[in-house]
Amino acid sequence: MSAEFDEEAMYLNQIPKPMPSRLRPKSVSSILDRVMMEKGYAAQQSRQLIEEEWLHAVGEALCSQSKVGQIKRGQLHVFASNDIVRSELEYQKVKALRHMQRTLPDMKIQGIRIHLAKN
Image (cartoon, rainbow, N blue to C red; front, side):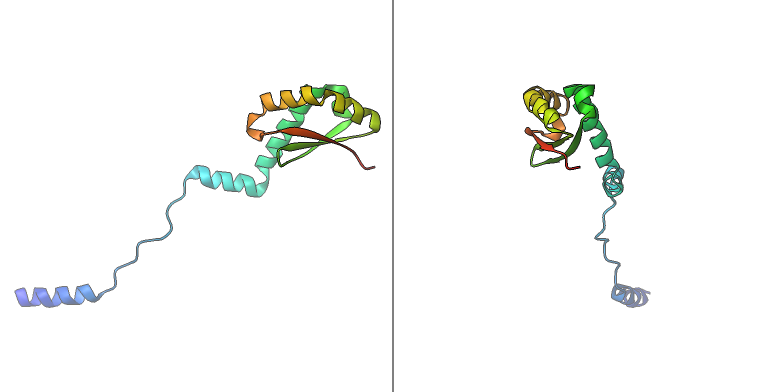
């Protein structure tokens, strides 16, 4: 019986063993983060948040005459509808920057660039 067992063990050892999977299960949070990023939900939510805080920073009158752009290299780009609005935004820029930095610390806004909007 021992000879049969050894022969059987020899044949069983020749069968290739399945390789361990290189793919590890991913966490639900990482999958949700990726889906949010691909679908643009995260960008849309952060844009709405920036626009809301811009309204609080400069007031309704200036907010309605300006448009918040993107944050590039720590600079929040804002587009003013005309030169008068641009001048007023330049005057209030320091106050607005402090407000944005205080209320949106994760955005890492270091400065505000004000441009004249193209019609």
